[in-house]
Image (cartoon, rainbow, N blue to C red):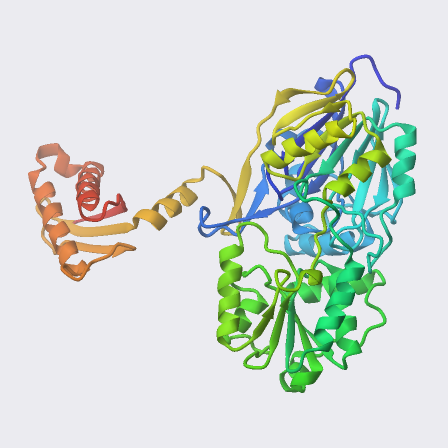
Length: 557
């Protein structure tokens, strides 16, 4: 494709900049009024206490809806890169490109949303190349904490962009090949216009460490243990699973899987030729009766997730895995920021059952990060030698520090966009040239809703302020002719005045305010409901220092 006089190459993050997770990036080529787009990754992030009832959050793709999207390319199969595909594909509607392991997992996601028959999935071999509209995309083999991670060399008439995806440099990756340094150096020789690069560990000196070293450390630790052994790790880290399985088998132990995602990921790994020379996993029936010194459980839930396998083990409710005095649990994973309390509670519950715990804090060799530390970032810049550095995959201070590092190693231009910032990469100097609508959508009750959705607003309000429900009957003259029934959710009584007595006092206030209404006001339910709500919120402020949601039910006789 030949470039035209008014063509531009732009980069647009709609998720994953100024945050870790929920990655959705887009590259646009052509004149503004007729631009073609390539979407890279469609990921999720997860809810917290600020989003009660919401487990999954996805980027808002509204700006891209109706645009000329030529393809969706997935760099790897972590949830923060593929987890939103089933929710957002109907809004993007473009062919999906992925390597075999990732393609296997996204088929499951699309099947769950009844979309599999609608989506064209193009499997690209490792190191393969495809032409997607004006974008020539070559998959570059990287190393990360999942199978088949890829960087993307995106070639356009206005220049070559290297989109790293998530990566690190690992000379002993256990699963898959090493980072394809010769291919990246070749890109640098050709000339890289811009590198869009992972910022997760920019503040960490040195290098992330190798999965090969973790395999050795796990093997040594597991060989010393007697009794039942459980290992908690991210199911997506096939290399880590491989290391644990081989360490177990070297000690005469058989492996049982605990957690749905463990079964899903091992199926995907075997589908593409990994985990082929290991013994069959124990069935649930076998695991229940297998000798304690001859079993190892691979478990989900190392981040303290309430419904995952390790949490159920800690509560004693898991149907297969039972741990107690004399047993062991290895946490072969890091604490994701924000999960510290949940992990601490999980570990306390396991310890209370007599389980001996092992973490990276007391056994540093049993985990390494999947993201590049400072020395690896410097090495990548030496290989790729881009004209422009565009840090992504990090909160604000991470992106700014990454830009500083890029300047230190001689990169001429840096841009640190926020979600929604459109970056012009060419022609001319790199710059943020526009800000487009962006935000988050919440998966709530199986539906996508906006950040400002009324249901979530009310749920947040109720979670901190409580709810009062009031019901009474009026006759034709507007007189109360029934008991006033007030029920509360989430509001306390105390030792001096039980909640029932407080609610009786509130019922008197309701009676007084309704009795004070005259004329047409008594004929209008809306007026009555507003008067009751004002009265109860004012009283609640005095009693509880809360302004609860007030629902009033007025029945007419």
